[in-house]
Length: 371
Ligand SMILES: NC(=O)c1ccc[n+]([C@@H]2O[C@H](COP(=O)([O-])OP(=O)(O)OC[C@H]3O[C@@H](n4cnc5c(N)ncnc54)[C@H](O)[C@@H]3O)[C@@H](O)[C@H]2O)c1
Image 1 (cartoon, rainbow, N blue to C red):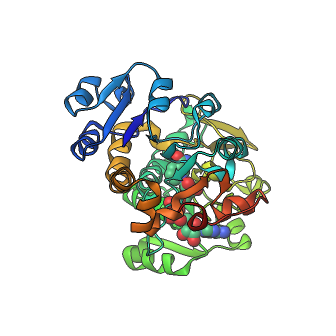
Image 2: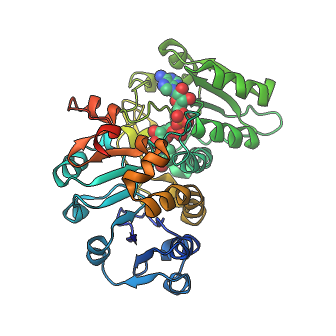
């Protein structure tokens, strides 16, 4: 298969879909790999490293899109890239269609085969291609939250760990999935007072077993959230219903009960956000203030640490990418049925149930279309 990887054009996005090591893995299996010039620079990979790996460096994005049978990216395509879509092209990347009707429309109109990282669901229900970025975003969420609590960044001036004789800062984490577990780990490591909430009591039991008395687990209800966030210094929102818009579980009125200069980090912003006051922000201007509360709502948090993020993502995408490249998408799905769960659009149909339901459009199972 001819596999292409273009330079990400989202503002301040430095990750890349294919590393030199993984280009080599595709080449070794007889595939051709086209890399747009300087695509890997932001993650610390030079064009020379790709050439050594057997890839071909192409000067412009259009030629990569036009000459490839599968494009492997990181972020969802931006409007400037929609013109490159075509019905015989496989697009393997994060799509987050639930929050992006324009992209969905462009994909359906073109007939492109949209294979999303974030909905690929393994037999045990896990989301292996969302997980690595969630691990990074979860860890970063506390790091960023701690930074914006500093006075010079507009925060209340609270140090999460406290010091002997002075109270610790309180961190409330909404959602105990991959992001939440990682946020919890770092917040506990920093010595904060940590509360984590979820509707899934099994997830809370797991954390309770791990951390015992060092954290507080609480079943997530409207009333409990309102109560817990009132004295929080940092609230991290990371709930997910796969393929759907995030539920707005943090209401605007809760801001009034919080201490001025407290920080909220909406990690779920890529699925529309779980705070009513969320607006997407970017790394060059990541925060805004509503009712005295600092909001951090960057949709591509792992982009801040592209070297770690690119390597972590590639480790997980390679296995599925190699299957698609070897057999073609349709045959690869027959061999490994979990791949159906990643197909969001195929030949003009929306093949992701939650995305179709969210926009009230027809849903066609990928198994019926992709044969
Ligand atoms: N902004 C970024 O850069 C970035 C990076 C990675 C992941 N994300 C996003 O973070 C979100 C979380 O990802 P994840 O991998 O942790 O997902 P996950 O599926 O592992 O965890 C989500 C958790 O939310 C819980 N949940 C659902 N509804 C809830 C509710 N009403 N109250 C409390 N908990 C609820 C679920 O039970 C689950 O435990 C996703 O939207 C993902 O796309 C964003």
